[in-house]
Length: 147
Image 1 (tube, rainbow, N blue to C red):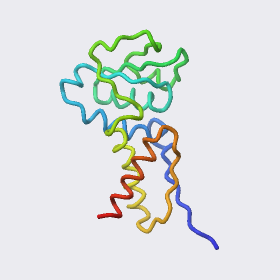
Image 2 (image 1 turned 90 degrees about the vertical axis):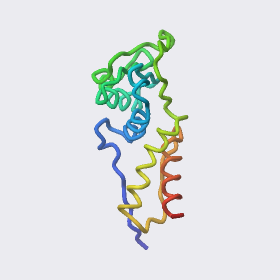
Image 3 (image 1 turned 120 degrees about the vertical axis):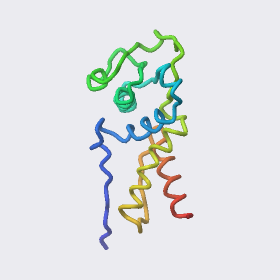
């Protein structure tokens, strides 16, 4: 028995992962005042890269806290970088990687696109990692099938 398998290539996003969806949504949810204060996040990986890219597009000051080693792709996009433990918040708005409803909703757009592309989808496999991708996709798919 052969079953069709469909892949969602999020690695083809501008920053190389699905993280741009959630970060963009989170930054779009900020008030004009919060955007003026700037934003801060902790990540040297895909979240950091997406965070830096999205903030730059919006013209928002972004500070990324991370380890001494910073990915070169992230470094090119970011406004500032600080070593973990060497930065005070200075009024910056924290954009957490996982525990953020706007991030989860942004990642959930993947689930909506899956349903749009394959309306009769039976099973969707999602990697877990921090949980925001799986939570967002699951919530979107469940909600779409309840409507």
